Image: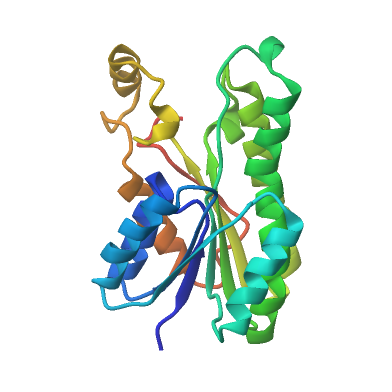
Length: 242
């Protein structure tokens, strides 16, 4: 029996690479995006070539009712979820004194509320099987903080704390909860960095390069395939940078 993974924010970047990697390793894929349905259709073509099933949903990740409807639809289609990857998120770069109320609300809802809401709905599904993996995509800035990304750092710190707390809550039910703390990854989120910025960062990274979405996809898959004793961990994937 093929396992099924649900990945949020899968239209591009880390989410897309993770969906493809899981499909290549014989997982059925359920994917979500917020508004880039055009990119999901091309992802579907690539996924189905791997001989696995693919279903995608366009939804508001930060809305509790939307999360409830998503899981209800999945269950009504006689599907289950073995692995949840909470990947959807955004960033805000700039001085904290310039942060607007709208920016903060969008940031918190996209990065934190989305994780809280969807995880809340997936737990009963995993409890029926007494088995499951929940993997949250975080950031090294959630560990150490970043100048010009104070609010973003705060949201990822929240994800890290949520991960550790929920892991304790669900461990007796054989559901593992971990997070991947990403370093600088080659995604649209970091497209604001200039070539000079990237060169300077690479000089600080022992691995000598920024990460690729595939680097994170492999780490997520390793967690999905890990044993039941690995839970409550924030695993940093940053080339030895922090």
